[in-house]
Length: 502
Image: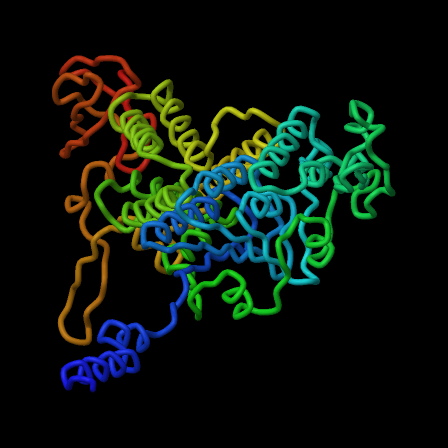
């Protein structure tokens, strides 16, 4: 007969086997894993210093936020080689995060190389990737194939990147070299399939172990390798095709919906300010405002306008990563030299020319990442930046000549010039406006070219001169003039009056 105690123990064991423990019940109630956290960063423009700087900043933010997968939504025609290389190195060196190139339409030239550096390439069946040949603009204004040095550098970068990400090296190189032909070959013993170029085949030591196949249609003579998504997957250049973003989340095993890091308002404004025509306007208007401010010293509309224009210019260049405080310092130093030339040093010589050179040079430097060009592409970029700045300077000169005669007649701009004070005579409705007495005007407004006066103290080279019954602040041509010497007004520019001893 079974004892009651043993019977109770058997029942307890049976019940415990049927009823889950507290820990087991908690596990059963848990939701399935939500997947890894991913973010999407868009590259829907050409690759330039500004877009590259924004992309690098967003990538760093995504990594710092704890994202495990960073998806680059790419639709770009490519762009600057140096910026492309920086972006490629950025993703190749990112060891703690998986990088994915998601191509819905086109990844051409530098964008194709950047996609090649990502851990995975997901592409729509009809999208395209490839054609990374290096082209430059020639002296005749037409685009042409870059010199051998630039082509070799890009080709080697493509091969190294393909090796790092496990993609066919020769197809990656073929994106940059139109002269080679790529074909498929099968190993006689193992049956392995590889791609070779005609250049490699000539130097292949075990060529007799391979059966040479037909050339790849997309990698023939006189063409850069480019193919659609379906073909890229067949050739091993892309990992998988996709239809929509939900399928991407499923393929990558990431949480859905995927977070998108869109452009901020500051990035939108910076892009707008970095356009060529906006750069031209900022520099031209800023220089005109400086000239207006110098003609009537004191912080006024001209000074505030100049500060706004050049603050926006340098801020947009800081955002693009092309400018630093050195360029700002050189620009400010140039303005100081120009001011000294106008108000302190007579004539217009080394200080004035040096100041103009510093101002214009700093504007060119602020638009560039590399000041000394190392290849044709950088040389063309330097020429464009110099042309933009010099074009703005010529526009400034033309505007100054035009405004010097009519600025007092243009509504709104007439406030920038000093007008003679007006005295009111009469009362009530009979008030009439008349010009104020000459005695109410400052000396520099009353004096005219050709007037003579007496030095009211030494002029070394600036000082004061008595003309009739009023005094004028003047400056000589550079000579020191003794007290009580008779002088003559030979030039007048705004408040600047130049005299010469008689």
